[in-house]
Image (cartoon, rainbow, N blue to C red; front, side, top):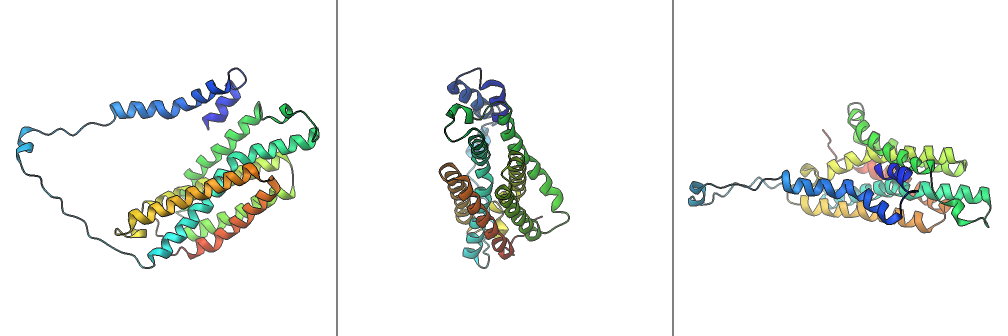
Length: 260
């Protein structure tokens, strides 16, 4: 969220190299501080050094039925989830530029279509919607099951992408992308929860299954951002509608998910 806000405040008064450095400060400075001050090395006294090492008892190893099917379903779920969420990072600027080109004409100066000023804050609004989605899912779980929540999320996403096609308007484009990003936050919390849930994978296949599913999520995000970057917005939105619709049978089939 801070990147669009800083872009609105600073992008016109400094070079892009300096701006990238400023945007990166909130990322690596807290990390350096945590490494030096938030972690303590374990201290051993002389008595502990003389004692033989004690072997901790291992926990019971459990397996789950349909392990490969569970991994595949979660991998598809994460892939579609990141496809929808990551694409908004580039889809909003692409739609804004498209509307400017249609307004100014195809032969207009390229500088006219650059995202600047208050338009940068629209990107921050879309990003902030994801945070609200992550908060709201904790209340939704008290009323609805996993399948009902995320089947509804998939249907709403289909409607949002359809709205971008029906009405080519900046307000509609921003509003629908805010909705998609909000639902991305809703899905993200449950996605992360399942990825680290041993009861879903079983202790014997937890590490492998979680890694494969997480890799599927990354692949979906990369495919989504690549398509929106190089394909025309119209064709990408059609693809996003089909992908969102495919999430419905995936969610319905995930009967092994047990959320607290």
